[in-house]
Length: 418
Image (cartoon, rainbow, N blue to C red):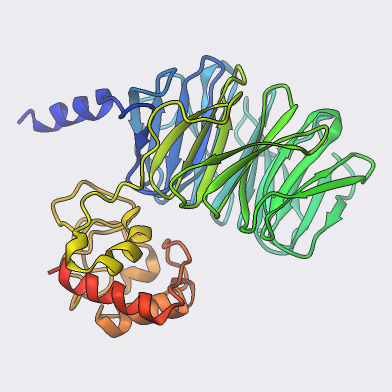
């Protein structure tokens, strides 16, 4: 049988449409190598390595057990990845099916990575950050002090490790000394990036972009009405891009905090952003499963920017319900024969026991199978939220608060999943 090699060859060589690439779920992380190659990863548990220019996939890596949350380009063309499984994988420039090395020790999902010289730092929901020497195996330092999840980590320009957490604090970790609390904001912090001169840029739940200097001085600007979930600095540090759940990316001049561009996509959350090595373009990824390229000088898309990948949604069954379902379509197919996606397909969902679809790797919570999906239980899931109904699930936290829209979604699902 030669079907598998043929399918793999097609997967690794298929060009993206225009300047876009499509994952099987939201694109959670991006990294750009010095040679212009791009790596993308996300909720579909896949890492896609794109050749310079981003039009052709040269490798698809499926190794992590769960969503891939962070990527970092390393010296020598290597790549680091981390995810929901709590592991940090180190990949060689021409990777095979398994990583070159695996760094273990975190007790929860690893949400952020940062590299500087021969060091790699990781931020985890286990409440710690770790600093690793890439020439060794064990962590050089374990940084403890945040109250709850550590969402982001960065190396300040003077080499100091900085972290941002769910507890709303921005901390620095001098080696051999007690940690410093640089700022307390009172709301969760999601993203962190280092700028020249020891400045740190941080973004969080209220949508405000803040620049914190080494002397504690602070400047701020409202980057959007929704949470900021990703930040990226241009190679020269003169500009910073802020991506958020509102569906757009704003680009700011660091010196003046003047808005330069707003990159308008399809209106769905943007989870990741990265600059090209030459600073001429920006890459973004989000809930619509696409990787997009933008001209950094003009803020215009470099290629077509289309709506979400929902052409296979049978809107005629219930137009309003089909519209509400678009947020689900990033992770779930309606057809049992659809290619693998981040979540299980929904064909025959009503009457099916939770965690019972053969061949899908469920989280421990869903694998218990103690809920049967009916109109009532699905409605409850989207009313109270998956974090309440099925705590521990990998499903992104989302609810449908409007009763009319929830009813339309359930009507659509009843018709479309038969």
